[in-house]
Length: 132
Image (cartoon, rainbow, N blue to C red):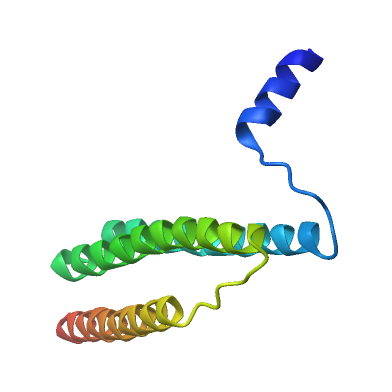
């Protein structure tokens, strides 16, 4: 009933005065977190697919790297969400520079790795079809 809903809201939400753009800022932070979350889940799924469908150790290593990147992205997104939430609650905003650079570098390495795996898989298939 209403009592349980009020108790759940009290323990899962923080009420703040909605002055100026407070609600809009917090909702934007939540949308950003959800975007990071979707990206992390996509990386995890891509890693699992690569480990299952790419042949041999190449697929396993590539899959593990993607799963590791997705896991790091998941942890970073939660940390970032709560950091921004605290800053917004104090009337400030923490601009992310270091975290974005780290994620960009890791994502670039993953992209290069994926390209390398694709070339490896294509070259193996091409050489296998030529020997038949």
